[in-house]
Image 1 (tube, rainbow, N blue to C red):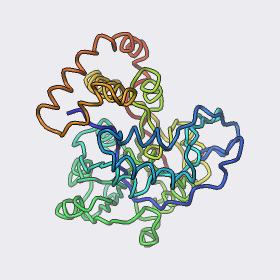
Image 2 (cartoon, rainbow, N blue to C red):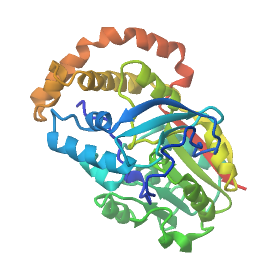
Image 3 (tube, rainbow, N blue to C red):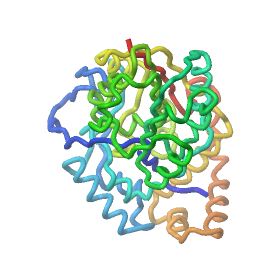
Length: 361
């Protein structure tokens, strides 16, 4: 079924700072490398963001709640999308993450994929590293599907700490004998784990987070000397494709950072970490075509809130709506062919995720 594209940060519990007081700065410092060589890409209004997350026609009450929430988070009715020309980091300004209220209003649910490319890539890396008796931490463990791939074959369940915000996932994780905690990675409750972990995992988490220096400082403090952290974030080139080819925009305060290997290098360097490896996910045509058909369909509804597609998407969920939406999405497939040809020419750079391994020095 084609649904609204919102990824919940149930992957991580985050300590939200107040909206940063640099709204009037002409060239805000990049949160990753601290350079002032930053450029404005465009502005996003709170109303535009609210419309993308919950169109008024589909749910007027949620739309109004999200609009008020976003305006409060930003400290105003607009947000700037910035790009750092030094490290390539893309970021919203003010650099403020969505809070629990925002994600509750957007209706994001705890639906976790059982298999992801970054899971298999990390498993392969762990096998290469061959560290016995490893103690691990996963931030945003969901229902534990990644942990299930490494336990008990490589890691004992008793040596796992899992952080998760979704209350429904906590008993599932504990049922697998993982120690599950509903705390932020920067919470003082984790102080007792300093220098305790060989590996830390953050999959599709970091792009949701503000407060990068406290985050990376805590990551290093939790790692043992010689330990590694594995991150996966959306591929910024894929996001650019979406936004320039009639697909859904990637708007704050959902994702507030667009990461590059250079951005990871810059922020890691300040906190005693080094980038040991960085790879783009190979393009999966099955995954890409499924997302592109769905996301372009959603975007057509967003751009024409009074049109047929938006009217259909405002209907109650059910089999009839699914069938009509599928037919409408299929009708526009021929119009997507030119964009797909461009993707084929650039397929080596348009996989879904960027994967990095950071090592404690």
